[in-house]
Image (tube, rainbow, N blue to C red; front, side, top):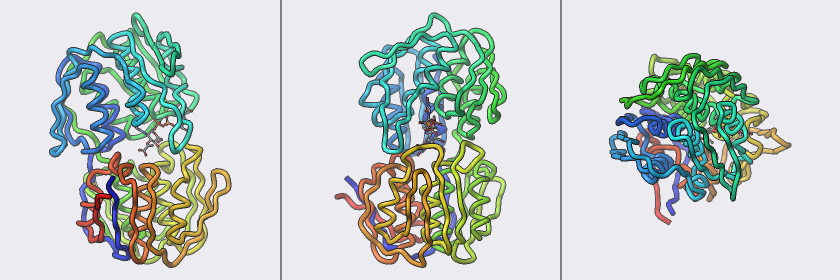
Amino acid sequence: MDKIKITGGVPLHGSVQVSGAKNAALPILIASLLVEGKCTFRRVPQLQDIRTTLKLLSQMGAEVSSDLENNQVEITCAQITQFEAPYDLVRTMRASVVVLGPLLARFGHAKVSLPGGCAIGARPINYHLVGLERLGAEIRLEDGYVIASAKKLKGATVAFEFPSVGATENVMMAAVLAEGESVLENCAKEPEIVDLARALRAMGADIEGEGTEQIRIRGKRSLHGCDFEIMGDRIEAGTFLAAAFATGGEVEVRGIGPECLEAVLLKFEESGAKVTRGQNSLHLASPGTPKAVDITTQPYPGFPTDMQAQFMALMAVSTGASIITETIFENRFMHVPELARLGADITIRGNNALIRGKPRLTGAPLMATDLRASASLVIGGLCAEGETTVHRVYHLDRGYEKMETKLRALGARIERLSE
Ligand code: EPZ
């Protein structure tokens, strides 16, 4: 198992290119199950979760040719022979439950392991199942598996109880091949949903309203292959900007439209950073120590839960006290005891964390618990005096492409070591 060693205290400076968005790429690669023809995907990040997705698709019978070093993947799902996402895969990557929608829509059956809980919360998939049932799927649970079937899905109105990202994606992918029109209400509005809609449209789907509460889809008999480039990763971009601010540096991130990160940029500005929004880039300069500001995580366009841990590392070195409220996941403060090992002063009360900023943190050995928690520990280590080691960096490798290489290019003293 690898670990990351950081010698902190160096302000980050320079320019960094953002990779393709993991959370857009995962459902988009899976959408290739909807079509017989070849799908070419570009700007696919070289990440563990992407490899897991490609393995899942191969196991199902897809022809997969990947050149992840160059961020390109070709998938042809002409001969799907397995309609199952087994426990071992779903356990490691919950996003694989979105195979349900496309498999049901094109082949009429699917068997997917129930994911179970994970480090950040219980994360059930009831909204996915209710939505698919509305389109006519018959669903039963057996031996820990969801077994779904439908002769032909039929368009319907689906009103989500909560704007779940995964449920919106699953039902969108089912509806594009359903008979007739579907109206999805209270949809997730995340930019990754918009990117999935763009990809589905590139496959010939008739879909409108993505990025708003209501998505309308007129089902097609069949879709076709596509050539599609994945959007830039807004959370990776936000993570680099938080690291730059926390270390007192100045960084440009390239390959990202600024509008998709607006809630985070506003909080950086409220905290004193100078942010410049380019057409396809962002620049952040830190004129001094960050000021304490409160945040509450919300569905998009609110402050993203996937930036909460990184923002907390920033607040740990701010002047003043801030409250961070997590409303999306019930257990997403696993980074707190680890940040405390660096000397951060954080108290948790339910889903609120009170952070009293400190002028300095000091290096320590740390344990990563999930993807965004790992990123916050790296930011903590970059600010801390002395040496920090972050263990279990496989969590980081699930969602950040070449993070330590990119940080090193910005001047960080960071290296990966084999344990
Ligand atoms: C997506 O997860 C992202 N994952 C997460 O990214 C992200 O944190 C999350 O959206 C919120 O933005 C991918 O895109 C692969 P949800 P998802 O369904 O789809 C509850 C990262 O670090 N819920 O919007 O699973 C659920 O338990 C990650 O990259 C139900 O109760 O998120 C959670 O509390 C982690 N029943 C809330 O809704 C359901 O059927 C939001 O979940 C579905 C969800």
